[in-house]
View 1: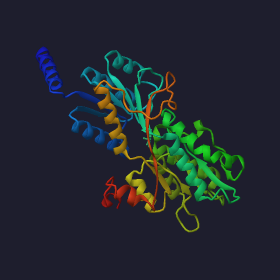
View 2: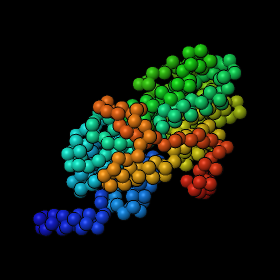
View 3: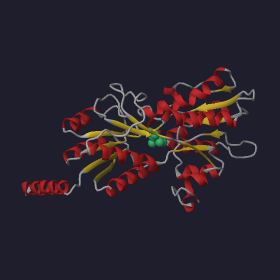
View 4: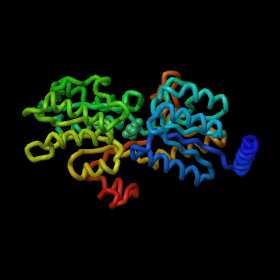
Amino acid sequence: MKKCLLVILGLALALSSAFGQQLIGVAMPTQSLQRWNQDGANMKSKLEAKGYKVDLQYANNDINTQIQQLENMITKGAKVLVIASIDGSVLSDVLKKAHDGGIKVIAYDRLIMNTPNCDYYATFDNFKVGVIQGQYIEKALDLKTKKGPFNIELFAGSPDDNNALFFNKGAMSILQSYIDAKKLVVPTKQTEFTTIAIQSWSSEKAQARMDNLIAAKYAGKTKLDAVLSPNDSLAIGIVASLKNAGYGTAKKPYPVLTGQDCDKANVKAMIAGQQSMSVFKDTRTLAAKVVEMVEAIMQGKEAPVNDTKTYNNGVKVVPSFLCDPVFADKNNYKALLVDSGYYTAADLQ
Ligand code: BGC
């Protein structure tokens, strides 16, 4: 029976590749965040439109599940693996297997670390995301002309995600000089990446940390002017904490708060004045670029890249394509998100 099934599976595989239906594996980290659902759906539909068969998997933010899913894709005969990793540093063994089987690997959005077997990387310019956030705070508090001092608290993303470092470096490239000049003050003195990082980009953990910061320094009269949040999932937790602590009134307005992704809930929070801005990374653009990369690889060509310097994964500099992130706030969201067809107006009500 088992033998028979294997023969049928073999025949099906042979037939599908004979008819040009090559298998592409797409591994996404989690369905709990809106963006990855969009990324996965975009990749699947765009690859299918080009005639590929797609194995799309989500790993519930669990490292072993993701490794298992990649093993399965290799067994099923995938030709290319597109991977948005959960922990960028634990895939070396499974990617060695992929490499030995002649399978090419594209790191999707997050760099895969410490392996020679990551062939390409497609992402948004992660440093620039941080710069956009830093510049927003600079402008909102008018740091160039005002003396301050203004109080700020800093958050960073998940320490196992290489992007988190880039976002932080980009933002601090703008903010650090103001902290050095004491125009910006961090009352809790928590500035180290390891101290301010939130594991797994968790909204709950961000909320708990914000609760602690408020209890430590802002229970009395100290004004909180700004919070640097690297993305929207953290911003959701930070807003929840601020709301519970009574922010959002004329006497106690919300601080300037940054984000990234333009998740629906966060665009609504921007419209409601709880979150000041977000960074829009059009997942359609990234998916389209990765599909171009897949096509090039399948035709035995080099994939398109526009950066061969920035993303060293500890073993090599991975040739990358960086898409452009864009500033979003309540003044431009309609043109950016609704008119472009990314969301419907009803999505944001
Ligand atoms: C992505 C962000 C996302 C975060 C949490 C990062 O790697 O670049 O867009 O908000 O992961 O999922």
